[in-house]
Image 1 (tube, rainbow over the protein chains, first blue to last red):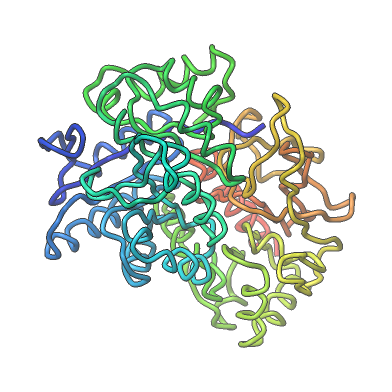
Image 2: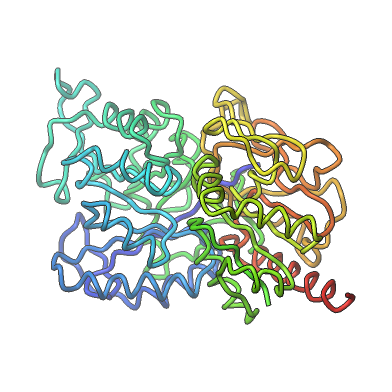
Amino acid sequence: MLSKRVIPCLDVRNGRLTKGIKFKDNVDIGDPVETARRYYEDGADEIVFYDITASHEARGIFLDVVEKVASQIFIPFSVGGGINTIDDMRDVLVAGAEKVSVNSGAVKNPDIISEGAARFGSQCIVLGMDVKRVKKSEDIPSGFEIVIHGGRKHMGMDAIEWAKTGEALGAGEICLNSIDADGTKNGYDLELTRLVAESVTIPVIASGGAGSPQHMVDAVTTGRATAALIASIVHYGEYTISDLKKYMANAGVQTRSVW
Amino acid sequence: MLVIFDYKAGNQTSVHRAFEHLGIPNEITNDPAKLDKASGIIFPGVGAAGQAMDELQSEGLDDVIRELISKRKPVLGICVGCQILLDYSEENDTKALEVIPGECRLFNPSWVDYENITIRVPHMGWNQVELVQKCELFDGIDPDADFYFVHSYYPAPTEKYVIGTTRYGIDFCSVHGRQGLWAVQFHPEKSGRPGLQLLKNFYTYCQEAADAQ
């Protein structure tokens, strides 16, 4: 039986692990390679890295982090942030990532999804979506809109439609982030998660808002997600990955128990 | 020395990193002399079956891998490498290597898994393997261990070659072959410690087979 995945997300800035709330106020919280290794040892099912470095120069530092991670952990990991071209995709895949996550790059140029899928296979193309609740309208019938730049720019696209488009273009998975819930620790946006999960057949990772293991259980049951992305609840030692997985298993969720 | 068969399959570097971590001598190459000297061959693969066969055929490497297998060189196929050992794949309507009888089929997203929820395609994530035949690749691995899968097509060899199955809507064959020619649908190089143990077990088998000769 397929296990639900627990996926810690590491934001990397200038080669260091960082955590901000709603994409602001980033603070240094450690070494990404060491942290990834600790999560791997502790039973993480997959790891997501986001390069939140703005500058072109720091890209090399980030790719160096990816390479170090690839030689030390033997579970899949994906890389996102600043992926705008096929060459950007190739760089992170060659550095050792299994999957590459496109977000605003795909909003601006949807063909990058189909081109990436044709070149590297759908299995490694993750469509990252940042979504904000808005008033339902003709353009946004679901009331969930695609945003970029950490929520600062509204794109006038309905999240449900974009998820379907992404699937049709060849994305192998969706990482669905609620900008409203992100950093709040009040739980995932379950309504959004379920709406998207039920509108596509590819796997959906719930992201944004995890504050307790029950939130993660809710995401993969009520929300119909196949994986739960987490950040601050493990980064500050509040829970360990194995604590979270034990809780989920006790709640009847199939999880990977041997590692 | 193990050789990772080089035909531009996407995951060959990941497999190489895993063996490096284990301290097992290995090389990514398709040099015939090195293949011939190797104690065993890893036959990797990600992406589409059609593309993988095109890559192999364009360089005559399809005959090279067939010949190694016919000479009883130990081989471990991974993911697409596992699939194209069969006769045929529905993916891109591909005539495959015809080393193991059977074909590769597409998962049907209307199949129902547990909780009465239909399956998602691709089958992506961690799942378990139930052995239906004894297999030394799994020596020392907890039967409850999960392995990392990511695929939309699944192998369906004739029954005699089914070694292990995995539940995803149906019980599909996730490990097939015979002694010394194994194929796993999952990625041992990305399956944490149990996966690394499986790679180590393959190496041990290869060394023993080479010593016995």
